[in-house]
Image (cartoon, rainbow, N blue to C red; front, side, top):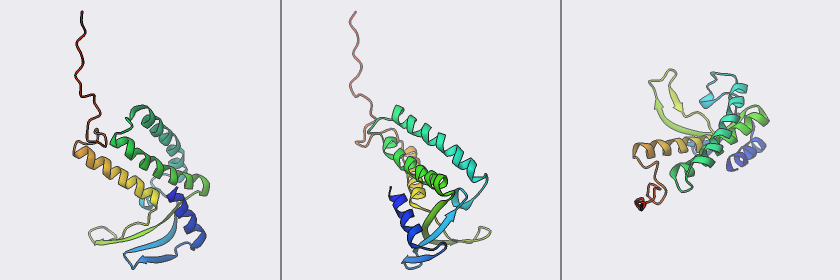
Length: 165
């Protein structure tokens, strides 16, 4: 919802390619429409991405509903991934492109050709997906992904009882 509200405000209040400094040159709002996929890369046509996204989202939602314990970290992270993907899918289906606006300066990466002086312009949906994936990676590497938020594994701590007979 916050992603779509920000996109609506940017589309209504800015001209395409207009840039407004928020924190000097470090962080700006820059209105661009992205007809490609991640970071403006277009390996396949946009309609392929759009067509593949809907069943993937439906499967992810079903899997989350059927298989994730309510208190697990995955159950808390998956809505970020689903929400971000849904926000960008909505843009593609309704507008034929994704509205991006978050423009962040980064230290120059000179070894790339061409050098990268600013990060690619992105949106809140992209950041939800990025943060969700980073959390999954960190929790996986630390072995905590299977735990619930209280720090337990979600397993019943009492051992199974032997049946009499």
